[in-house]
Image (tube, rainbow, N blue to C red; front, side, top):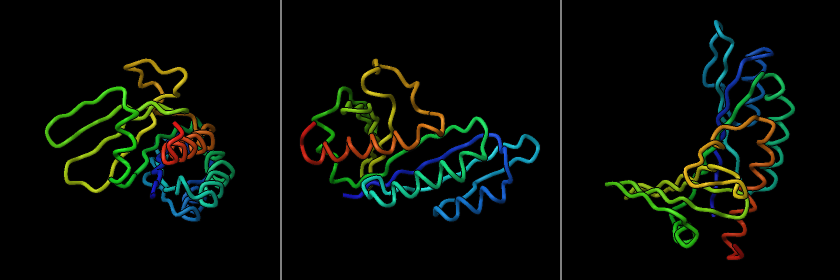
Length: 170
């Protein structure tokens, strides 16, 4: 099962944007933009959520060499999944929205509530952590953007949720 988290982050550059860009390249990521007037940076990188080595390496590199140089750093994440996983999520959905070619399921698992986006004919699904499961209320979207310090915890929780879903224990 393939699960790749696309992590995007932004904040005010508190260090050298060239160094931040170099550190992101070491993670297979890139600095998408830097505004010298405001000092705001926007960057992105990918993490193999179910690959323990990749997840641990990139969590550590991000916290130690990127997030420390970005003030008020915030991130958001989407997880790209293969279409074979859709049936596993359908039984866990608490809401469904369907319109034309798109379908969105709201899925509550052990650690997080997710929105699962799919488009008819597309081979991939986009899973977006919306809120921590214990504190979630219907309509609550407060958890889409989080402080960068929470990235390691979120990646570990998403990994646990996907592993439990795959094993059938949730």
